[in-house]
Length: 222
Image (cartoon, rainbow, N blue to C red; front, side):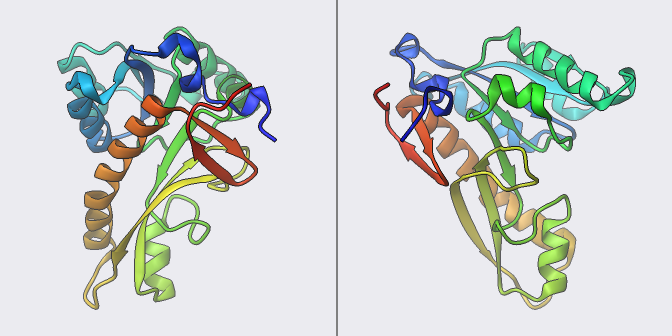
């Protein structure tokens, strides 16, 4: 049975007919972010990028947001005495923008209990492997080393584990005989971007719930 804590805020009536606010977290160049920004320019997409946050200064992901007039913030781990304090500070920064969804688009930090207490059930991450295989930051490398014939990307709802949350969507990318980590990573990105755009829009517009390990579209009754 779906509990209130499992219901996405995107499912709530106050967003009916209005663009759903989303905060995107990045750590690098922001190519996934750019795909979301481009999609959100169309009112029919139903999403408003409320802010972009990062764990480091001077990255292209932040510059992309600034060029589009999107508010940005930086929350660096090294600025806090403990990881727990950083986690609480990140949660506070994101909360200021009142997002219905938070999207990790290449954000290379694991969030903790404070963040998940605020945004659990509505924090999405896109991972460049077919989970549950190859979790962690070296998905394409690990896939090549294992010798799999199919790689891909997974969009999932973040939980307290490492890439263990309920799966929203997956796309498959064949592994070529001459692939390197770089070429496979790039081909996965090409499939990952449209998947992320499609499903963030659908989850925002239609609402969703998480029941066990299943993510179900639609506005669930409370």
